[in-house]
Structures are given as structure tokens and as C-alpha cells.
Amino acid sequence: MTKLDIIKLEEGEVIFREGEVSRQMYFVKSGKLKVTKVFDGEEVVLGFVTPGEIVGEISYFDKKPRSASVYTVEETELAVIPSEKFQKLFQELPAWSQALTKSLVKRVRSRNDEVSL
Image 1 (spheres, rainbow, N blue to C red):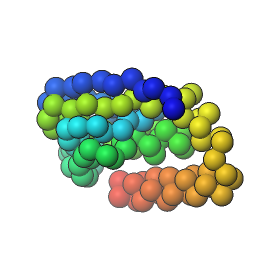
Image 2 (image 1 turned 60 degrees about the vertical axis):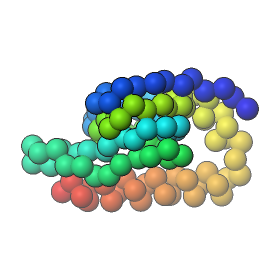
Image 3 (image 1 turned 45 degrees about the vertical axis):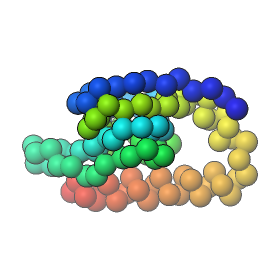
Image 4 (image 1 turned 30 degrees about the vertical axis):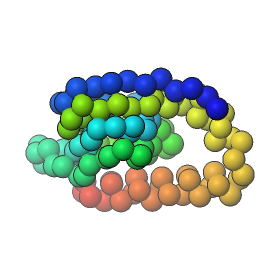
């Protein structure tokens, strides 16, 4: 098993911003994250990410800019999953599993793009 770096963040810190390039995704070990997107110049809360969930996976997989911004709502601990480490593991999965993952990411990105229209 590959050891991941753990980062500890205070309330109100930025994990990443909408439009940035993805180089990693994050596993939430503790705390709470807020996901936002700008619509017509106004920031709208899309949801929250809690322990046991992953954030940043969409652009991580499809290599497009981040579709939303993510901030800490409280003190948070994240495991950083860098693309080079994950890609090695991902390539070892069966082809059907890779295809399923890519298909789901494509659908989520499409829905996010529809919301912003």
C-alpha cells in the first residue's frame, strides 16, 4: 500500500479554486468541506464533503479545469492523492472498471456543465 501525505487545514482555507488545473485529489479523513461554484457573478454552495469521501476527482480524471471551488468549513485533515501515484494503481484495474470510472466522471462533468448554463 502506498503511503499518502496528510495535510491539516484550519477553517476557511482553500483546497482548490474553480478553473485550476488538477494535480491531485483528496480523501477527507476528518472535518468538512464546502463545494461552491460561481453563477452570474454569485458564489453558490453546491454541497458539502465529509469524512470518508473524495473531492477533486472530476478534473483529476478528465484532465479539464476544476469545475468548482472547495473550502474547509472546519478544521480538516486530508490525504493527498497525487496523480502519478493513483495512475499506477488505476492502470492495474480491469479495463471494465477503468471504463466505468471514466464514464461516471464524464456524466458528472456533463451535469456540472449543464448547471452552469
